[in-house]
Length: 126
Image (cartoon, helix red, strand yellow):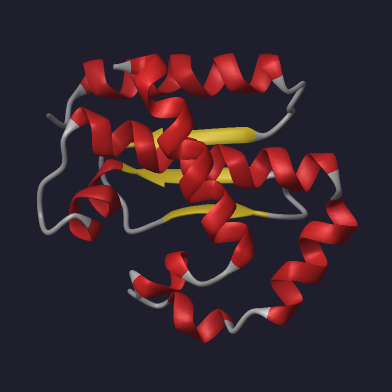
């Protein structure tokens, strides 16, 4: 389900959380691309449907697309709530582990928080 309708749904969700948490975060959602990440400093989310599909074995459901976006939005919320604390957590982690590792998201505290947030918020959008 990778089409304009999916992008519209994800854009609405991003806008809702930006308003709810007073975020100025720039969110770029595209069909193609190799990245899904939150970039501190620039306060920017790059979100690719293609990357979500790759992460999920080559295909993704609307639930997986939304969950991935909620995960990245939680990073933006945490960063904008306490930049210093978030950056300290990032400094402690091994960035090299990010390369195509699914386990990384299960061991870093800020990733665990983002996963839990996505799980809790997901049902609101399905």
